[in-house]
Length: 565
Image (cartoon, rainbow, N blue to C red; front, side, top):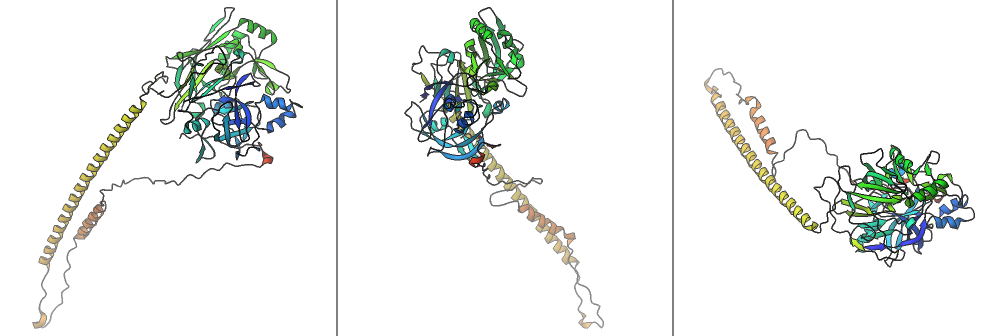
C-alpha cells in the first residue's frame, strides 16, 4: 500500500522556483507549503515571529507578501494539540552546516494532515518553528529515523514511521521528484513506495545507503559533459577519477570543487563573484545561453569500482534561476539577480547535488529497518503527457541487498527474503545448541577429573599421617616405675614429630582445591582479571527550555540523535 501526496499550487523560493507540498498543522489547522527534505525526519516550519522581523526591513508595509513567499507561517499558540518542548538548535548535517545552514527553533509536537487527502491526522509529530531565512522555505522530513529531543530515552517517530505503524502504508519507503518550473510540471511525493510514472526504472541506479545517517544518500560523479547548439562539447574536463557527492534536497544549488566548476565556467562563460559568492548572469549572457540551449549530463555511479551507471541530463532552463531577498546582499523585496545555481566547494565542504539536479531526476529510497540494511535509487525523471496524469504507484517491498556484491550497487529484487532469514536463524540455533552441549561435556569431564585428583590426594595424605603416627609410637620410651627406686630422675614426655608442618599444608592446599568445586561444576578464576565496571541506568539528559523573552537568542541545545527501532 502506498500514498501519493499531490503537489500544491505554489512555486516558491528566493533562490529559484520550487514545487511545494501543502500540509495542515495543529488544531485548528494552519496551512503551510513546504518542500521535501531527504535528510530530515520532522517538520520544520517558518515561525510566525519571522514576519515581524522582515516587516521592519525589506517588506515594510507588505508583510503578507513575505508570509506567502515563505509558504505561510506557523503559530503554535492557537493550536490546542501543540505540546511545547523548548528551544533547540536545528540538527543540520555537517555538510549543510559547512555551507552556512544554522538556526534555532521552537520545538514541540502537534498533529499533521495531508491537504487534499482523507487520511486521519498524524499525531505527535515533531514540529520545529524557526525564523532564520536560511532555509527560506519550510521542510517536511522524509527519513524514517526516529528523533530524540528531550532525552536519549524518549524518541518520537517520524511521519514515515507513523504511517507504517498505523498501517496506512505497507513499508518505510518514499519516492520524490522535485518538479521542474521550466516544464511547468509540479513535484511528486509518495509514501510507502514510488510513482513509476515519474522515474525511469530501466535506467535506475540502486545504491547502498551510507552508514552516516545524516549523509546517507551518497554516490559518485564519474563524468560531466556539456553540449550546446553551436557544437560545443566539453566532456569530463580536468577530473578523471569519480568524485563523491551527496544528494540533499534542502540545498538548492550544485556544489562542486573549483576545478570541476571550471568546466562550467568555460562552457557557459561564467564569472565567479568573490564578494557575493555566486555565479551571476547579466542580460546579455542570459539571452545567449537561452539561445544556445546547452545540456549538461551528469554520469552517476555507486562507487569508484562500480560498473552500473545512470545519466541525468539537465537543459539550460533547469539552471535559469533568480536570487531575491535576503540573498546576495539584497535588502528589498523588488530586486532580483539572475544566477547560475553552481557553487564552489572548498576543501572543508562536501560536494552536493541539490534540488537543481532533482528537477530532472527521480529519487526513491528503499530501507529495510528491521535488518538495518538500506538502498536508495536514482533515475532520470519522466514527464507524463499531462499534469493530470494518474500515478502508477508501486510498493518497494522485496528490494534486498546482495551481500556478495562488493561494489555497493545492486538491481536485484527478491520476494523470498523471509525463507532466507528463517534458514539463517535455524542454523544459528543449531550452532548454539552444539556449543552449549560441548561446553557441558567439557565441564563434566573437568569436574570428574578434579574430584578424582582430590580424592587421590586425600587418600595419600591420610596414609602419610598414619605412617607418621606409627613411627612416633615406636620412638616413644616407656616411663619407669619409680615406686621402688631410692632416687628417680623425671623425664620429659616425647612429642610427636610434626614433620615440619607438611601435613597441614597439604590438607590446606586440598581444601583450597576443593573450594573450586560447587554444586554446578568448576569455577575457573583467572589470575589476572581486570575489574569490571558495572554501569547503572543512563540518566536522561534534559535539554533546557527558555523564557519567551530569550526566544531564539543564543546557542541552544541540539536535538535529533536518531534511533533505529
